[in-house]
Image 1 (tube, rainbow, N blue to C red):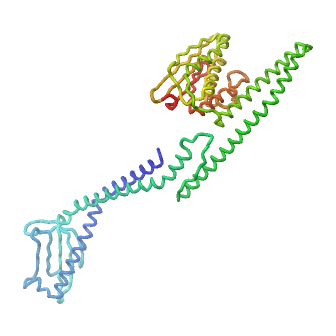
Image 2: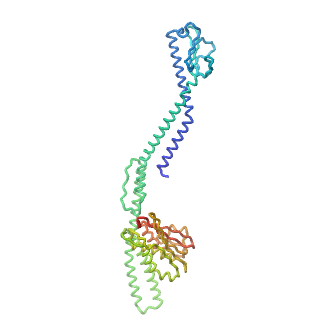
Image 3: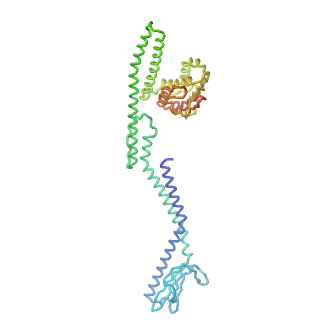
Length: 441
């Protein structure tokens, strides 16, 4: 999961949890607010009544009677004023029931005892709980809608802000990591960002990639120079050995030793030529503008290796399409790629074994050529390293893969061709050469 997706998911989940907790606490919060407001309202009513009494006198309410009582039409609020007993609490706010015109109602009551004219009076102001609660649910809905709207707004804002913050990181991934082919040819430019961490990451990647590029260039230059320099003394040695062989006075034993030396020089010369080929491929010294038919190339290779097939009594079956044409290819390199793979299928096959070469086309997706043999196979733990140069194998004692598969890998990478290997020890191998639509569309 991408970092942006994780941050968005975290933000969404955290805000959802906040909304759920708020929903659970909302009734209690609204009730507390309503209760506090009711207490404040009752105290304000008390102040207003006392202000009238101190200004206009208590007869303003009694009007000659010993007590006073008043309530609204729906009995939602009432005020009573009467003489108080000595043991009555001086100032309380409670919830209690009162009977008003034969109706028993539950009120939020403020009881206040005060002195006026050397007498103690009780002021009681009440408001029904039904009147208090009638606004609770609408308040809860308004608060919930406001919270949901706020959460949605902040979620959108967080998403936009997160995208802006992570944009430099996306640029780093896209320009420094995605679709980067080795060796790096383009000069890597630092991205513009005010985030110190992203700057550090970007500069570190640039430094690392430049060091890798520099090390690769040195290795490639050394390989090319060493290969060129080795060809001269090898050729001189070959010429001298050939001149020695012309001497008719040599014994048979001496001739055998010289022949062994010639074989060693030939192997060394072959290795040097392979290194030069890899160096030329990695230096982009081949053009990729040709069209080739893989059927024709494979037929030419089979004809060239026919004597080896007969010597080992191998049966080869080919069923590659004769009409398939591959574009943007270097014919020499593709010939070498298939030659090395088919040659290995012969070399590591069993006596009287089989080799099968087939193809498979998935329209607009891939074109695959499969080379299957019934040879000794490859250990699973060796498959990932068989394309390494001079990799030792367990096929036979002291034998390795040499440079053949390394050349195959270099050619495949140069053409953007995929290579898949399926093999088990003792059950043969299948090499799949996968061409992308750019080669056959």
